[in-house]
Image (cartoon, rainbow, N blue to C red):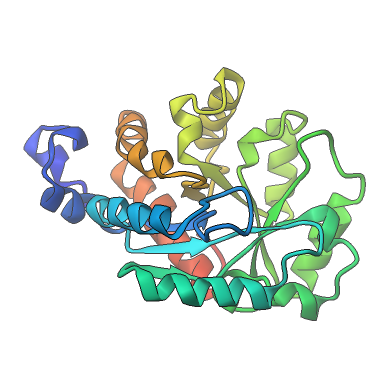
Length: 255
């Protein structure tokens, strides 16, 4: 892992083969990769292109996580599109969803388990609203934990109303956090970048993912990881890019 450190070079200096050996452990659990069902990729051509980029960068598995927010997209349709995608690419595509907390509030546990990552019945990727806090969020997340779920809040750094103290309180409650790699590269602006680094320093982040919506999100993967390697140890990057994402897909507690 991270052999380029021993060679005294940066990731950007490596060949495709060396890249696969170096960051080939990455498992991406948040990607809007299924064409035409949300605001992510819009064609099978794009899917094939993204799969090729992912393969060259050494990503092992990609979890398709379309938005589930208004009742118009159900698990059966996700499965149909996912199965079609699997026929078209060589990389492993896993089942998943990014579930809006506002949609999920009144759903039973049985319904919510249909949208867990890899259909493991436990790990659920939850999106909060950007506009402002949800009053009953603490109670809902507590309910998920009590019913055996492993909740992961998607792109935790992007909610401007959440302070670091708020994140600590949720983390103490047993809630885990995913951060977008692009946040460290300024993709969402300076405030989000600062919050991402703050949460990383506080060791509140459990998973790093792409939140891919276009091929550019994978094309920029290399500079994002290069940015992180300046301040983050190889062991910590391994935890965030491989160990915990793999645990999430298996339905295990995150480290």
